[in-house]
Image 1: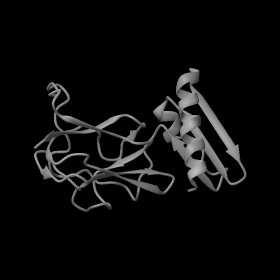
Image 2: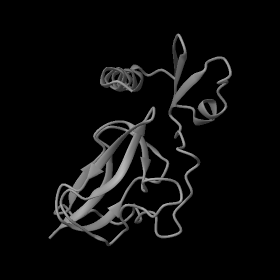
Image 3: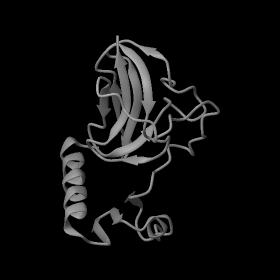
Image 4: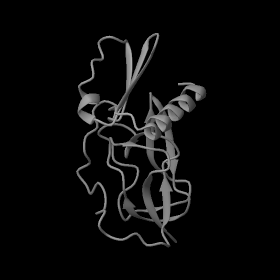
Amino acid sequence: MSEQLAHDLLALTRLFDAGGWKELRVEYPGTSILFSHNRAAVLSADVSAAPRTAQVGAAEPHAAPTPAPTIAASPDTAPVDPAWTAVAAPNIGTFYRSPKPGAAPFVELGQQVAAGSELCLLEVMKLFTSVTAPVAGTVRRIVAQDGELVEGGQMLFYIEAE
């Protein structure tokens, strides 16, 4: 995917969120994109009309992600220590904890990481963005769930710096 297309998709996503619409379908030759706040509508969208369809609002699997048998995330009810470093999604995309389906996650809850360590992947239309640790420390919270669609700026991890 070109950088311009990724920029355009992000702009469309922001406009859709700010516009108060329930659904928006954008079509051009060979591609149809459905934006919807109704997850059921996105999951049941008719994709036979277009050769390629990206559905924003539901996670696009990269070969059916399997849930990790280990702890997927820490409870959201515990308070976040203000000293922890937040790691936010740099862009919209599907959050993947592992490099490929069935592989071990990049990091686990409580794991020590070095600055620059890969934490996860975000995927938008087959373009993968690696998210790395900004500081060395311990992973204290994993906020997003594997296969979940996340938005730019959404918190993904919290790291307690060394």
